Amino acid sequence: MMTTKLKPGVSTHPLPHAARQPRFFYFGAVGSLLGLIALGLAWELALAPLRPGGSWMVLKVLPLLFPLRGVLKRDVYTMQWASMLILLYFTEGIVRATSDSSFLSSRLGWVEVALSVIFFFCTILYLRPYKKAAKEVAKQAIKKASQ
Image (cartoon, rainbow, N blue to C red; front, side, top):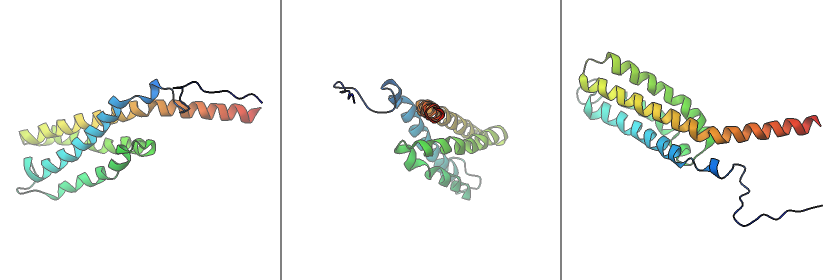
């Protein structure tokens, strides 16, 4: 049986070195998620609430808190479902940006749209190498099982 020694600096991580460096996308996802949480709180409590003095619409921020821990820990599964959850905020932002009569509220709607789009694409681009690696592992498993 032949054993191979790894050279110094050679990683045994399943992803190639270049694919493990999407820090820009990770920080974009985290920043936009935190931005959406801050925007939702500020929007419904102070900037342009539906009712003067704040509204119960501030509770829309709660679902964003569920994936926060997983996104901060770079959990692949959490980032996958959070990318789908964020589409609800994209939809709400579009609706409020195009239908709210208040100038400030409509502008905040566009900010919500921008932050949700940033989160979605940063998450998808961050997860891309993991998806490619998973497909390769599945392909190898199928090939091995068919032999």
